[in-house]
Length: 458
Image (cartoon, rainbow, N blue to C red; front, side, top):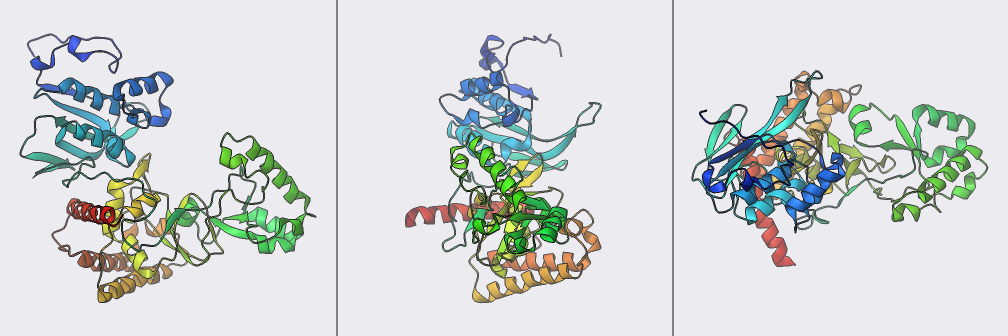
C-alpha cells in the first residue's frame, strides 16, 4: 500500500461516508461491522437503525450489523462499487431475509459472492465463537457468482438472501399452510404463571401423597427441553381445562398458588395476560389437542442432522416451547423427519444463538410433495420404521439418539436413510446427485409455484 490510511472517528451509521471519499473514486468496501443482536442494542443503536432504514421500519427488528449493509447500499447507488462484509449469520436467516434482503433487492442490489455459515473463533480470553457469513454485494451484476462453503466454492447463476443458489423467495409468516388441505400447526399452551402451575416430579409426588384426589388434574408437561432430554417425564402441571377448581378449594397450597398467579398476571404489562387474572387456575391459552399429536421442539441443537420429533397422547400437555401438529399421521411425521424438510428448516428457520428455532411458519411455508397413494403408503411405512428403531433403545433419550454419536444407533440411522429416500423420490429428486443446496433450491422453486396457486385460489 503506497498511500496512508485515513481514519475518521465517527459513528459510522450517522457519518456521511462521501465526506471521507467520493463513491466515484472507490472500487471496494470491506469490513467487519459490530455484531449486536436486536434485543441487545442500546437506545442509541436503535435510533441509528431507525435513521438508516427510514422510512422503512425494518431497522426496528434487525440486528445492528444490518445497518452497515443498508448504509453501504445507499452509498454505492449509481456506482460499480462492490462491498463485502463479514457478518453474524442472522442476517441471512428467518425474518431478517424478508426485512433486509427484500428491501435491498428491491433497490437493485445483487449478491455477487458469499460464504455460508462458518465458525469464527475470536482471540478473546474466553475464546468466544461467532457464527458468521461473508456477503459481497453491488448494483452492477456479474454473470458468474461464487458461493463458498467449507473452504470450497461453486459457480452459480444467482444467490438469494438465504445464501442459496435459488430464486429470490421471501418466506412470510402465515396463519395457514400454502399446501391445500394441510393439517393445523400451533405453538403449545402458554401458562404465564411464573411457574406456579408447574410441578417437578418430586413436587407432584408430594402433592399426590397428601391429596390423592389431585391425580385427575395433574398432567405431564413437555416442552422442547423435556421432550428431547427426558426418558419418561420430569415435569408436570395442574390442568383444570375440563375440571372445576371449586372441587379442590380445601387444598390450601393450591389456593396459595392461584392467588400468587392472579397477582402476577395483574402486574403484567401485557393486556391479554391481565385479562386472564380472574382464572389463575388455567393456562392463558389452551391449544392442547384432543387427540394424539405430533410435537416438534421449538429449539434444537444445530449439530443435529434431524430435529427429533414424535407423537404424544392428548393427556401430555405441550408447552409453548414446542410446536404442535394436530391430527398428524405417519405421513406427516415421515416428511417432517426427512432430510428434505430438515434442509428447508436449516435454511429458513430463525436461530436462538446457533440453535434451530422452529416456528409454525416453517411448517406452513414448507412445500409438501404431491404423493401418489403408493408413495404415501411407502412414507408411512418408512416413518413407522423410525419409530420402531427408537423403541430398540427404551432407556435412551432423543438427545442420546440424535446427538453427535448417532452412529451408535445403526438401526435408527438406517431407518432415517430409507425414509429420506422415500421422501426424495416423492418429490422426484435425484437421490445421489442432490446436495442440500440443490434440495433447498428445488423446494424454493416449488414454494413459488404454490404461493402463486394460493394467491389464485384467494
